[in-house]
Image 1 (cartoon, rainbow, N blue to C red):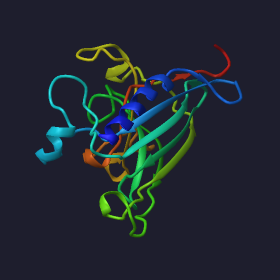
Image 2 (cartoon, helix red, strand yellow):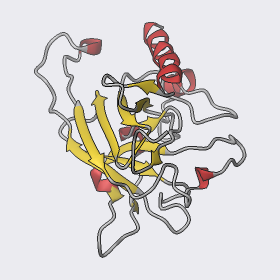
Image 3 (cartoon, rainbow, N blue to C red):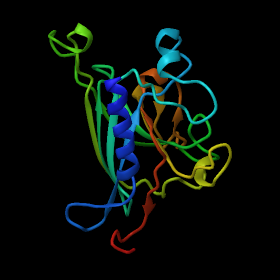
Image 4 (cartoon, rainbow, N blue to C red):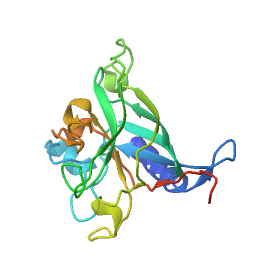
Length: 221
């Protein structure tokens, strides 16, 4: 119950901080996005799936029984997409990539490309101790920072989320943290980046969609 209360507080904070807020220097504006593990059907154990992953109409729900999460601070506008991401309690010693996922599957949108924002490796498991549930193991933390010219605003025009569509009617970009082996990042020989595998219980997904405007002068409002 305590975890659920904490998670709900974090989600409420997301609604407040994902809107524009002045940065420390007052030179621009930034947004904040929280990422969580979500209730994929592969979580088949009914003991926790039915209790912590409600089924029914509505958005893909957050898996409340897991303390795995991430947080990304990012620029709302500017010539480059600047961001700082931290992930906690992920799979240890694994390579992860932070991506912009453009619907539909496999993430290339309609004639576009998924965008890889940055990559890193999670920390290894820590020594045995008094950890959660008596297991004594923790770790799996990661930091990814970037200042990338992604050549587009977010969402990109080729993204299905660029215009409002049923059932959600939402407009914005999806930011995911995925296993590096599961994504093909754009290259000169293969410019269309895309997902090549699907292991969602190891990923983090956006709590809400974000918007970024690529403009040459970040102070040109």
